[in-house]
Length: 103
Image 1 (cartoon, rainbow, N blue to C red):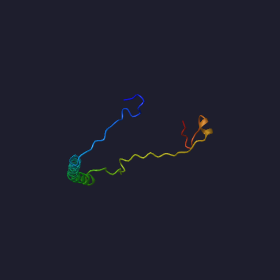
Image 2 (image 1 turned 45 degrees about the horizontal axis):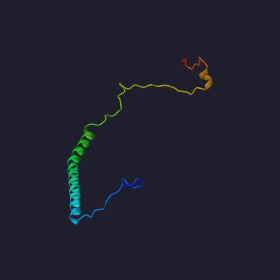
Image 3 (image 1 turned 90 degrees about the horizontal axis):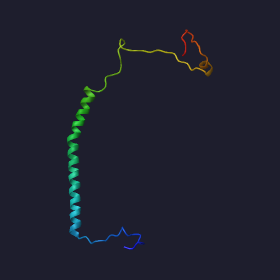
Image 4 (image 1 turned 90 degrees about the vertical axis):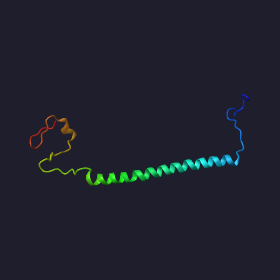
């Protein structure tokens, strides 16, 4: 290999491949593809009914309970809000109408 050869490490040779070698490679590829397709179909046919039945059971019997609370257990926080101006914020003792202080 010459030192100034830009393709020094990339040399390759082209070989002639016979028909039977190509046929073997194609046959192996088809066999592997068919095997993968059969396994995928089998898994789908086994798992799909299980997942469908589990989802139906979850929908009918499980799931979230409604978030509606009874009147005795409900906690209601009622408040009135207003936006304070910069002047009101700067004052230390601003009072609301009912006497509560803003801190």
